[in-house]
Image 1: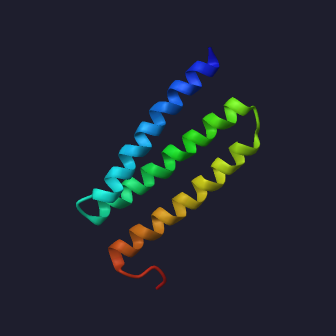
Image 2: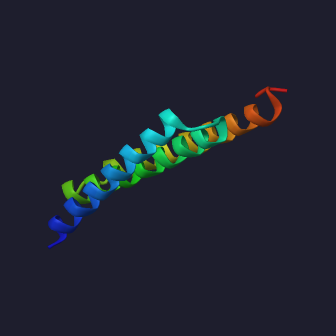
Image 3: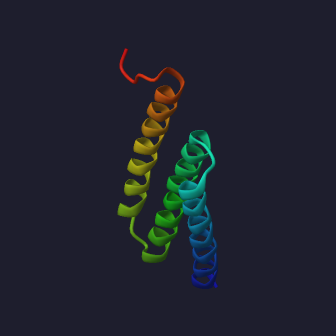
Length: 89
């Protein structure tokens, strides 16, 4: 039962990833593209966590945590660049 649920949810997250990629490529302006990139890495974290549940390995959870930290820092840097035009003051 858990395997079927993981497969169904993985398919839903893959559809969400495709829709995020479409928004990233065709976004009307830069804030929409940054938001799509942020949502893209959050969905990829979910997909990695589901794969870790499926395989039964805790190594994937550490990878997901690393991606979450890097994604937060990159989103903050992109937003700072968008607001001020400069990352390092």
